[in-house]
Image (tube, rainbow, N blue to C red; front, side, top):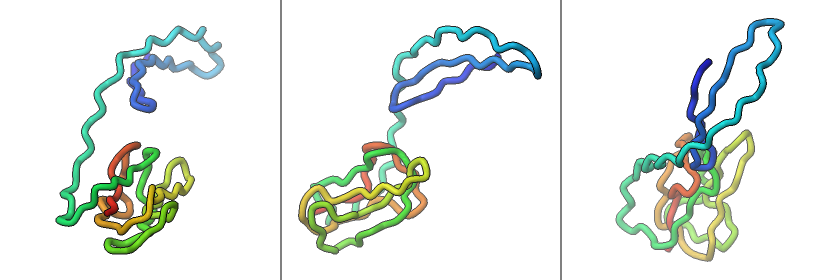
Length: 123
């Protein structure tokens, strides 16, 4: 038997996995105890650029930065894609919440991002 801690949406679960040999009948499922939520590690903060804006654009899901759709200084309208992240083989555009100018891009293509992580700012 092996014990693992699995975190799903910020909630940690302790699970036990039993290996069955070939042809062995599976063991009855044992109830799984829900562990207290583990404190999420603080994401490594990148230094904000000098003219960073006050409007934060954050990742809606954990994933990997797939594409940077806007550049610093570019004017964007509400709903324009600023960054695209890839999660579970899907491309998810992260859009500007309002009209503005991109003040900073805080990630690079290939970076891992957490849900709620800062991707860019607008001013």
